[in-house]
Image (cartoon, rainbow, N blue to C red; front, side, top):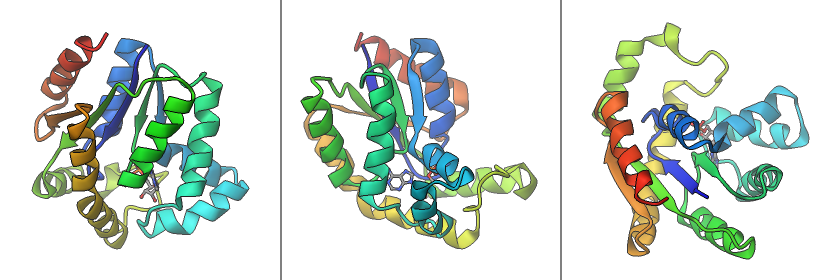
Length: 192
Ligand code: AMP
């Protein structure tokens, strides 16, 4: 059994890594951002509540994210997953820690992709606007700056908290996909 989380700044490549990890270790991959975008697409109550926050690059209120996340975790009996894009605040980290404890499930590891703002900007410039995810309505410069600020304001607290519990794995994400995955893979293989 393996219950994992992957976090990092917006545009760091966490979804790409999460998919590779899910494939190799046969885990369910949930992205909180994608779950929210799915709700927006079907115009559900949750989607309607979340849309303006997402479009402006702000964090969606906790109760909305918790509902969508726990509903989806319930479908897989709260086990064997990799969640991407959560926690984004220390309070979210403490919430999920308590929640999993109540479900008698471990929280095995939080993977943090260390990617500099310069690297993310360079990747965006290289990709160009035409290759951006067309489904996303939050790729405006203002929304991207807001996302980066939320990350900068909250990340140290999350990392310090989980590092103190020996649950944090930091990986240098300023590299191509394969060596990043190799490092993560090696770490996960020590958990099984
Ligand atoms: P992402 O796909 O991870 O870049 O997330 C896109 C957007 O979804 C974010 O900018 C937030 O508005 C929202 N979102 C995703 N995950 C969370 C979360 N854990 N807490 C609050 N908002 C979130």
